[in-house]
Length: 119
Length: 111
Image: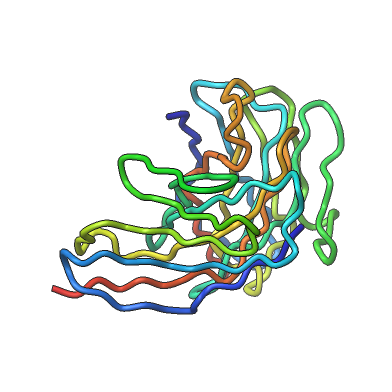
């Protein structure tokens, strides 16, 4: 199957700093990628839809100025957590759908996730 | 997007068949039913997708009754490595529709 990578796999930063997380589709092109956040023992929460060449679409309640998304190419989307605070500590996961996958509409390929800890 | 409801947790033993049922009363005509598996500290992994009746692949079967208001994921002869959270989702056909995850079912397989 298609592979999605994320970098870094984990990051620890000080409060007030910004952190950038990369999401790459390694062997397929993705005009659309998705960013999720997951707190311990909870489900994934969709944060935003990243669209190649255009602005991201944010879910209700997600601050677009705090979580900056850039999708500059068909294989790369980045999420920047600006002025991070301890409450932003979470597991961030991206996903993408292989445009060539045909009729498996519900199939998305997820990255391994990035563990962010803000001190 | 149709809301899904699943049991919060289930327990089983190695070698048994596990059936996880999901209700999606408001499923729309163009919705497909999709199941994902997630291990701790990993991204979810697609298991199976279906529209109606029965779908089977190398890891699971998916049973969908005629009214499509529920579905059942069947895992044959589970092993300890099947301990994970299983999510039932509905996804619209076509396009690049977002997936909304519910609470999922936490399956624990015991020796």
